[in-house]
Length: 372
Image (cartoon, rainbow, N blue to C red):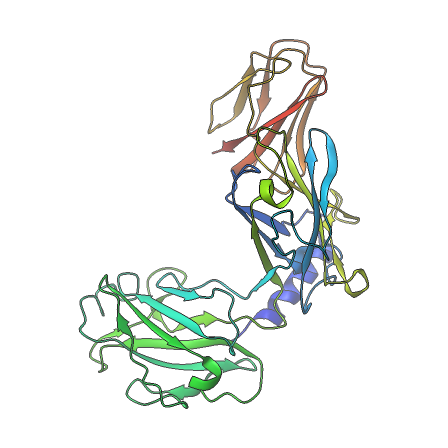
């Protein structure tokens, strides 16, 4: 059984921020190599934004954003209290934790008062063969209320407070599903409900399915996180081209954004600068979609993925080359590109994805490369 460690994690994060000038990754984008024409998910960790307490424990979070077109930032702005060009809301959804690998839940960010569908994949539970091919699957469960796990337990051979059986439906593909309203199923009247605690069996304890621990070795109880008003991780999913009303074939190297709690007076979240002391706008890199198409800038980049050195050749009329990490921080800048080729050392770079922008006369073209 697990207890919430949110307060402990917050303390650790605050101490780290106070003692280090290293830039923190407060906003991540998925997929990492997306362009502005792809659907993306932005995830904000409010404990890592600037100031540290800006949106921690906010009741809601909204994004105020625009895009960089060429070298011009904050274009096609979508105000936090408006809607995207495609009608998408600026509101982020709360995230309270990772779902176990064997569990999926719809909706993903449900609260204890919502109708939720929980699906167990018996091929991914622990041990792997526990319920694979079972004729029946039952859920033995409770909830975490005010940091206390396994409250209001519903026995696998009992009934929920609303009279519902804890029996899952066979989907015919080794997955099993149950639909519940936690508030009604567990008879919850009050308190902060942060998770469902559960295990599964075949109607007896002769066969039991649990989650894997972090090492993938030991079987532990499932913990299915539920959204609360005190989450510090928030997500929004949209397609930049549609959201900002952009045309195909444009140079869109970045999304520029800040976040607030639905009002500028209620709290604001920004990025830290390179020194970790000043709050600045987020600059979230995107891959270019019209690379190699301009007559002013045409280049070849190799190898990709790269080990210790990145080669760029076939350069023409280039003013500078800049490498950014995925939180928009400048890693390398090469100016006065006088020859047709450049070699950039990547030996000191951390493994991961990077954005490289080649600036020509009135143009900027971007692509991404992977550091091994």
